[in-house]
Amino acid sequence: MNDRIWLSPPHLGGSEMKYVQEAFDTNWIAPVGENLRCFEQALCQYTGAGYALALSSGTAAIHLALVLLDVGPGDEILCPTFTFVATVNPVLYQGATPVFVDSDYATWNMCPEAAEEAIRDRQRRGRLPKAMVVVHLYGQAARVDRLTELAARYGIPVVEDAAAALGSSYGSRKLGSFGRLGILSFNGNKIITTSGGGALLSNERELIEQARFLSTQARDPAPHFQHSRVGYNYALSNVLAGIGRGQMEVLEERIRQRRANFAFYRAAFAAIPALSFGPEPAPSFSNRWLTCLLVDEARSGGVTRETLRLAFEAQNIEARPLWKPMHQQPVYERYPYYGPDRVAEDLFTRGLCLPSGTNLSPADLDRVAGVVQRAFGR
Image 1 (cartoon, rainbow, N blue to C red):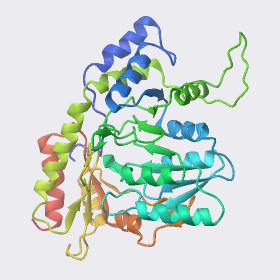
Image 2 (cartoon, rainbow, N blue to C red; image 1 turned 45 degrees about the vertical axis):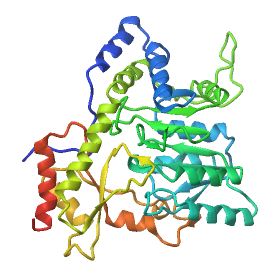
Image 3 (cartoon, rainbow, N blue to C red; image 1 turned 60 degrees about the horizontal axis):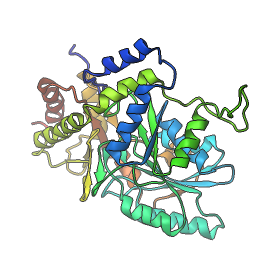
């Protein structure tokens, strides 16, 4: 059996251990220290955000964003249906209600027209959404210009979930810098990693200072342990921030490698008209975190997304369907959904994520390509 080819494994750059060792040498193991300061500074410099807070996960960052926006029971939060569940779970943590919005084919992200329909309908029902969560799936930018303009018109703050989109941009701005609060993830499968971790970005210093306070159990300034608010244990450790500090040094190279994977697959499958790839409309630039394709079953001769996934698994290669829409998930199927075109459902049915790690060898890429080519008789 050939060695396993994973979808998106971590890839260290070489400096991570130096910074981790510094944390051990100085005994700054807890969630404070030079690695944290430098990592947060690097995130600000790269994204253009004014302030950054490193956290234990992207989910923690989304949760704190909702807390900072005073989201609570009875509130409604506009969310894309086509996303990972971590985008939406914090809405329920706060006792609020998610309102799901369909995607468009141009970006695979939240459809601005469907979002406006949802806002108007909720307004007619007597309640505007308390916030809008805009997600940039697979590293591809949403129509962030139209969505932020729409949100501003109705006075709705934007939480920008750029968990998979570090290094991607829309026009001249990096993703994560458009919302009132931005979210990054450094999970083990992301373009850079801290093993587990995330970050909260904002241009409002007060919001980040409040989030820092809440992320360390909301301890009041007193000589004893006193708490006037509910806090959370969401801080990232100085040790893990050392990994992130080293990973930031190779981020641009990782983006180049992910985009090279995409270019390889596109060239390898150019003669298969039944296959198409994830979009990148101007003026967006995608980090191509994952290379994703769609199967046109009307032209595929019986080959489906599941045919390909099982063929990959038979060759010990990990491939994964695109996200199953939230409005089809058992835990969320009872919540409002706006999507007459059912785009997200179609993307899920026909879409597959290919191995996209930055440590794929030429032989690995050829193995992956060969599975697809054989499935189509090439």
